Image (cartoon, rainbow, N blue to C red; front, side, top):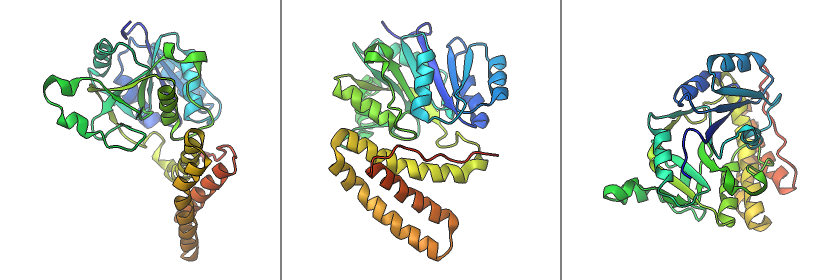
Length: 297
């Protein structure tokens, strides 16, 4: 069965994303049900969204639980066979969903389907080959045909729920970063498939989901979680030794840079590199992804 507006839902996880969420929602066909998971206890935001959009339900998770957990909460609320995961800073084009619908007919079977970001490659291979040239080098109608990849970025990915046994979607040990890569890797390991639809396009505003007044806290959190998630992902799928070999240079470099910025009294840079080193250390000794940004106003 191909995707249609009757068996598709959209899940959007938000946190202080009021500046971008309305543009995202306004770009979506208003006949498609939308689940917004707001990672706070902001009742006013919930009421505002639900009164403005009749096809939308907003769930308050009470606290910031991370992207993976937030998406899982939203997915479990959906009643449809297909779920499109979106970040709140993604804008759909007029025919984004239509092209996903049409191209689903060309694929006999798929687990994950993704639109393409207009400005950069939102997909890749785990062996780090650069496949972005595949689209550029194709000719005629072939360049518009869906192509298979190892992973797609998590800001826009459509899940075929029927392909996920026991409804296991995102690994909730990931708080931020690489939860999408982990999902795609598990799909590949279970002989599923991930496709990109080059005629279905989106615009991703990139890292502007949280209000700019929290920019420093976002950077501190981003640096901690990136290295933690990178180590955890590599350890989970390729072993402790590979994870250490990949991440140890970043750890050593971060310590040296921390000491440098400590000497010149640059508090912002000092905390950036302290957090990178801390993220590696905590991942290496097996501690969970515990760091949380301070978004108190």
